[in-house]
Image 1 (tube, rainbow, N blue to C red):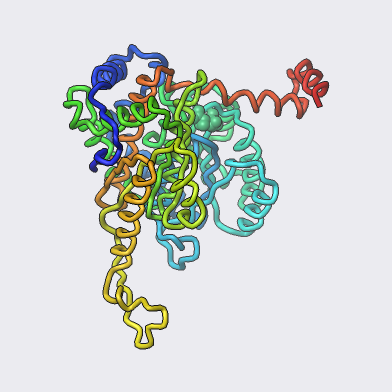
Image 2 (image 1 turned 135 degrees about the vertical axis):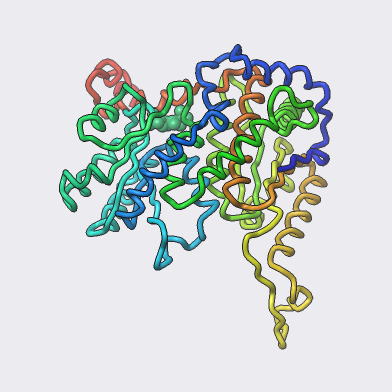
Length: 439
Ligand code: PA5
């Protein structure tokens, strides 16, 4: 993996000392929120026995189901989806003779139509459930799980259903832990010191990714190598997490308040969604923070391209470049050449994509949009593991340089309090009265 900041237009050397300080805070656990830095050494501390346990649990669901519904929201959902979608065939759910169950998602919204349609799809089908909630009390997944559990039990019986449900939650607290113990589900623990958005390399991500048929050992190998490459002992200019964190903070200090993560590979759409949560929840607080946005190119060049090229100059771009596609496809010659594309005949699709990428980079930098480039060799487990740990580490460093606690998310509670008051949840009587008076 390479980070290229030659088109970012900022000098990062003045931030060297601040970045070194942030790296040491993470190492020594002396920064704000250090109760939540269990993710920091997760790749190197994950044992073979634990991976075997994950693989064995995944094998049970793989053997007995055609669909597995991953139920979770935010950090209990996005990491798994990011990896599974990046590695899966784009039309996976339509493939016959599949080797792994189709992974579907629920509890990441409260859409009644979405949930009803999912339940319709699963009627009479062999399905299993992975319910993921650290707190064990989050409303969205709890509603979806109640419905899915009821349907599964109706379809296969309560005794069999319990073998088709895996719960991933706190080791002792929360309603989900109580229920899982009572019902005898297979469970995995989310450690206290691993926050939701930093949990993809814990069972939260590893269990669904293994169920989908991907190599969690290679994912962790990539992350382990990146753990070494971003250690506090590595020279500033050679440490990709240090360079990325410094560059985005330098740009922020120059008034660039929006970072757009761009890709030219549609399979990375959910990787961007994962990244948005990671940086948005970690940095957007105390009246500070870069707003993390995302676009999929070239698709969004035909929608957002105008704004990026010519709109308010408050943005910078970070592009994830995938050097080599996994498939090979060339553009054919056409005798009539009515579309005038014969000049491209014989070229690979990816050569066109790469020129679109280079053309975009030059156009956007000409238009006053600083650009950072992160290049990976290809979309596979190893490279994604590297990329995940790189962004996590850089996020911790960047948050400390920004001067916030990157590991809390107090602002997420505000909508929940209002929603509970409006729904007249027991215990919210005063809040209900107060909120109703405002309507
Ligand atoms: O990063 C976070 O803390 C949040 O996005 C949570 O992961 C999300 O709210 C889900 O919480 P829980 O796992 O407790 O259901």
